[in-house]
Length: 622
Image 1 (cartoon, one colour):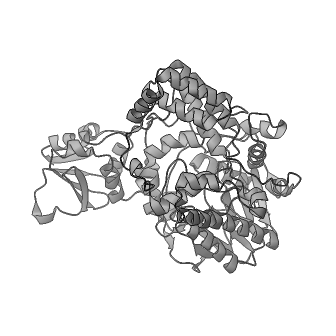
Image 2: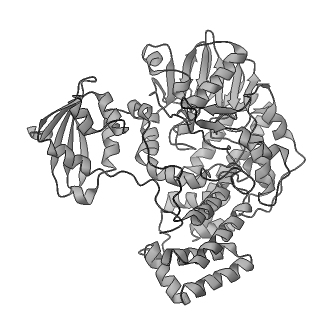
């Protein structure tokens, strides 16, 4: 990812702002769960601020990572505080008349509780009167049970505010596609890499994600329009709804009595992703830029800008400059990609044309590609408009990777000849071509020792050169998995128990929809099953129809009065425990927690048609 513009290395503004307002630190900055397992350790990154940048890390990424390690409780302005450095994201605490409003309670409850305790230690005990989720990504809601409880929300002691559509998108990303995203996230976030100069140094937007208990409390108040105002414990919030920007459901808000604009994740001290490399829906770069323009127009008097990641910005002119730079970055990516697309270039070709931002955009620290890159963002804009097919008939029906690799390797003259060509490319510095050739060899002959060793060296050399933290992690994780292939090693992200708190927050319909995406369609096509579910604690009745290889959940009785083959009577909480693998259907039936009426073999057949997600599927090998 070459760039031709160089930022000002003598500018220390970010260093000053990253530590401004520090009140207290967590010493040591290590958080454990109830079992004593470490779920967050910020101290492991200390080397970034104590050592000079080595040759194995891009100097710009080293600088950014060091800034992201600042941890503790920070005063933004009187009455507004941020907990930073206890997770990838920031938790903001706004003091009200009788308690506090907590914004974005981190990824897991242990770190959120530690952050709130750090605040309480310095500001005194104050009840949490409201929680605001700015958007539908897990690192902004997963720790909610560390700051409040479902009981407090049900009693009306705490309200939960979120953008319209929050639950739909939180479920579709974190539950439906969660297993595949989790596996790819191991690469993107470098979760299996050792921390250090030859391993993970963070990923630009933050250092890592905490690994504690993830939960969710459904919102009790939805923000449905820009200009909607809420008074939360005496705190006035003026909301801006920003759908299809950094998240499909997202909001910003302005605190007019404090002059503070919370911009969520729409503006950061890094270029963000139009399409995140772990996978997600393609974001709308044009809408993203337009909403930042709207923020400038609506909240031009803001004196301070805070976000859900990185550090704040102080000063009206500085706030406007940051908003403008970020707006122009996404607008440039969108407009220039579309311009070249309409000249006939494809996504990869456009990415080679747009290698850097021009002028001030290219010199700004805040638009550097630490997290998102110009290269993969350009391809994402192209994908949003044109899809996966580039219009070339040769690419319409290509062989899948293994068959394609075998044919390439044979055409080149065999695996040894292909490796020889790759070695020549490696020695000439053409690492991209070496990686391409070696990938074909490894997919055609996975055990070829020369190809594996050379690919490890190629990925490491590519990784060490990257300014983008996620690209670095992906290359180095690829090298690590090739090195460990065939070894009995514990892989990060291995299947385990699901979060019971997360499942309990879903509607029953969403639970059944999550089963539908696990149904083995070809095998299920041989069956027609009808199961009736009666939930005693919620009073709900659901019917599940399996037919034509499809699972269709229906609220209420079966259409046409068709008699179910099996009726199950249980508590909704029992189903949650079964899906979270705290128990099983046979155990629950034996304990009397589930009673059945009808052909019980139907349940066995149905359950046998549901696949367990393969979260450790191979990536660098077939």
